[in-house]
Amino acid sequence: MTKIVINGCYGGFGLSKAACDVLNAMGRRDSEGDLIDSHTFSYEGRDDADLVEVVETMGKAASGEYASLHIVEIPDDVKWSISEYDGIEHVCEQHRTWR
Image (cartoon, rainbow, N blue to C red):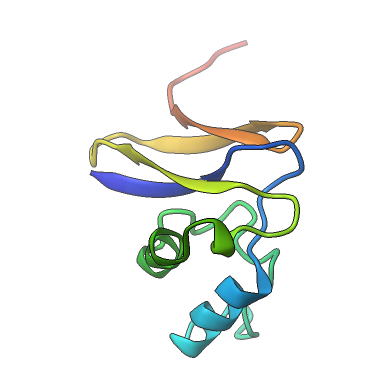
């Protein structure tokens, strides 16, 4: 199963400073080599093993000020994306669309 971190409340995805500090202590950096901040994982890396571990370990304390992070598990072979409305997110299976 693939574990994905999403936000479950209005406001939007965000990590707490404490969660960012833990990720930085693990040696994590953003794509530009800078320290992790509350916006680094906004839409990328949501299945990152370190991010999942931090959310599992810290629980509610991993959530930023306007977030309520939780983990969704999906089968490994599913191609997925995250959709959101007013900050509330859900995981979608990718499929083909034509117009």
